[in-house]
View 1 (spheres, helix red, strand yellow):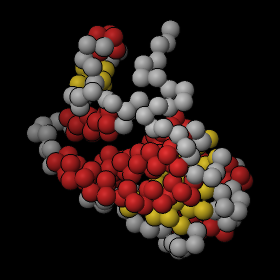
View 2 (view 1 turned 120 degrees about the vertical axis):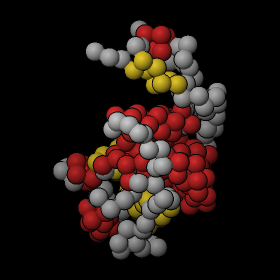
View 3 (view 1 turned 135 degrees about the vertical axis):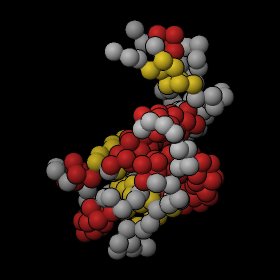
Length: 234
């Protein structure tokens, strides 16, 4: 079977063991809980996907990414507000669907690694089949809503969660139908990318949310409690 290493270090043991190598070339990753390497991995996979379609490779969609990331950074005030909602919770849920199912997992991971909060990720379909039972008054739930494919489903889920008294944080390119200032916090993500590329922009506010949540809970994002830059495995 062909093996491909997607790595920021082309001299690493992983790169040496693989048949093919895709170098990220983003420079040193200073964050212990890796951030820019994740974003670069998504972009490398997008380029790989375009390459599988044959030639000529049209890079037009990828050329939109730098401006989208710069715009995504402007959501920091909203991520700080959302961090205040999450700061007092011991447990929270992140829900995504389609391409942004992975976004829910990555944000939940960063919140666990840095803010030491029990954060779980679900698809909107799976969450309705049992786990929704844990949602009660003021329970914080974050929804990642990008593009039109699952918009109706996420709008419906948002209404259900509001009816159960949940505090909703929506990270997306539009507010959910029924957005309520009393229950909802909205973190904007630029809508300039095609839906299949939207996770590259959506993760930026997610990382900012994890950063501000860590500070709000009294921890140091540069010194995670139980995380090291290199983890040795056997």
